[in-house]
Amino acid sequence: MLKADIVIIGAGTAGMPCAIEAVATGAHVLVIEQSDKPGGTLHVTLGHMSGAGTSKQKERGIEDTPAAHKADVERISRNTSRSDLLERSLPLQGDTVDWLLANGFEMDPSCPEILYLHEAYRTPRTYWGVNRGISILKVVRPLFEAAMAKPNAEIRYRTEAVELMTDGQGTVTGVRLKNLDNGSEDIVSAGAVILASGGYGASPERFAQWSGGRPLYTAAVPTSTGSGIAMAEKLGAKVGGQDLFLPTYAGVVEESGGHRIVWDHMPSLTPQVRQPWEIHVDRTGRRFVQEDIESVDARENALDTLPDLSFWCVFDDPILQEAPPLLPGWTPEELSQAWDNHASFVVATSLSDLADQTGMPLEALAETIGAYNSAITSGGPDPLGRSHRPMPIEGPNYRAILMHGMVLKTAAGLTVDSDLNVLDTQGRPITNLFALGEAMGGSTLSGKAFVGGMSVTPALTLGRWLGREIGTRLQREQAA
Image 1 (cartoon, rainbow, N blue to C red):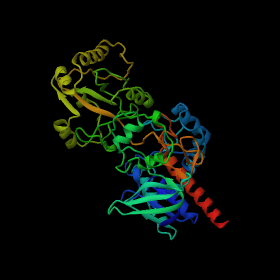
Image 2: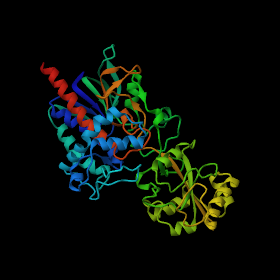
Image 3: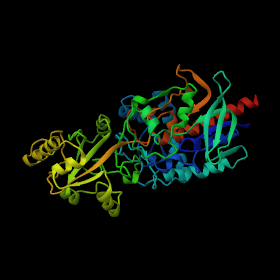
Image 4: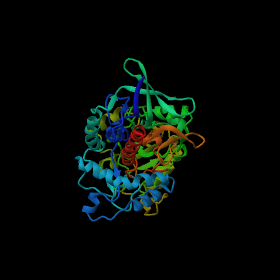
């Protein structure tokens, strides 16, 4: 049997900084990672961070405090985020940003900014790297690998944690491990097990289970299977946040009939960046949202009301020629192939043809487009209150792209106390079991909303904090 002071399951956004700090305390740390490399979601995320009182804010004369940051988070989330965990994370998040900068983080020179991809803060406190999440990984990975090279550290790649071991009284004593290459198993005993294993955005079955049966359209990394959450739930841990799901607005699947979405191919649907020329129509042929409303939250909540989280973005050839690119990340060759072969891209010669190809009822679709066009030509108000209406949609060719509410961060996760100790279904701490990052639910610190920088930054921040706390405690107990 193997032995370690701390087993950290997952070498991603939360697991790496947790391991760095835990190793620094002198504790013996074993890190388990399903993939063949560290980084997890940092390989795909945009890497937005937020923190108050940073050196960059001070350089620009921006006054900000953790209390102001907390007020903004609670405003945007409508008080659906965990106040106690905000108070744990927010006072440390500015230091996390400065820690990255001190270690060579290549920050976009425009930061800090007010970012409109999510519901906006009132103060410029959002930061990102010149190469998205990879810029963060470029800083953290060398620090992590240096920590793993210490005598009191070990990393096992291509290894899965398959079962939490207990003493029969509910205290976690270790983990059963499986080598994904040869199938061999080991058991490691540990003074603490930290689940930094990510969410479930790559598992349609677990996504449906913890998201009210909704379909999965995802940009998550393949290792985001929810296995850590499921493993703890089997032990009696409470999973919460299922009611706080909210889709990201919105993505286009890479392959016809698939569910994978690539961030680089996201459509430009943020009015503060690109005003809409198209209309957004649900499967019944009706518009369901004011396309140019500035509130991202309003668009996301409107999309969440659609049973399949899907809609058609409808326009015509004149708009295609005149409007700024709707899909700026697609090359001309990729777009040409999509219009020719991709089932989500439709070109129609008439409204009747458009209805036939998309499955929308012709009568409703014709009424929707007619009402939109009539309001433009008459100068009257838009039926949904839209202001930006540069051109009617009249043909000669009609076009539509099928878009889906999607996930990178999943909402549900293990319920923890303010010390990140996992709780059982009765609200009691499960001794020696802790959770970080998406494993404790993406909604925990953002509520039923997407709050800028409140995924990556808390994962990094609370990872560092918990690594220090658990490592220091175990070292002190061993010395006593």
